[in-house]
Length: 195
Image (cartoon, rainbow, N blue to C red):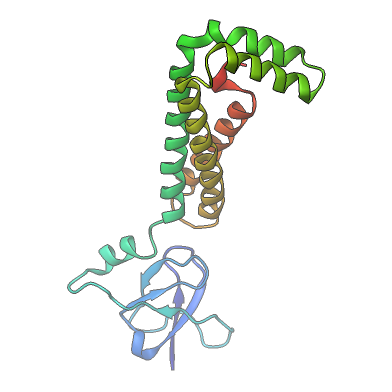
């Protein structure tokens, strides 16, 4: 006989084997870790998906602590938030590296903006590098930061979208998606180089 009940996290009907009554189980709908009741609270006539048992990996953990540790967290949302923060901080840092050199970059920016072909863009860059004895270190540092920002923002966007599919911490995931999207838009607009 099975224990049939409503998930306390998402209110969907689920069932577990009698052996798992009053123990931690994972909801097949929202993946939250919940405690199954000692006896059924729903009738036996409707088909209901079976919940998966949760094996306690830590000795002496409580049901509430285990629920927060296992099913209650949204790791993709947390990772997305951290990656979005790295992307934003990196973009701001790249901007601070480039800002003191804005006048130095102005002729290059104007030449690139007025270029009619890719060859003209390459010629403007070559002239800039020749005038400075190669690529300036500040420009290399800003460029590397820009690459790290782009990769972090893309990873944050992907993790945030995965996190939005989870039932917990959706606001954190949504914030990470918005922050990484705005960061990518700023980067595409040439924010860090002042172009």
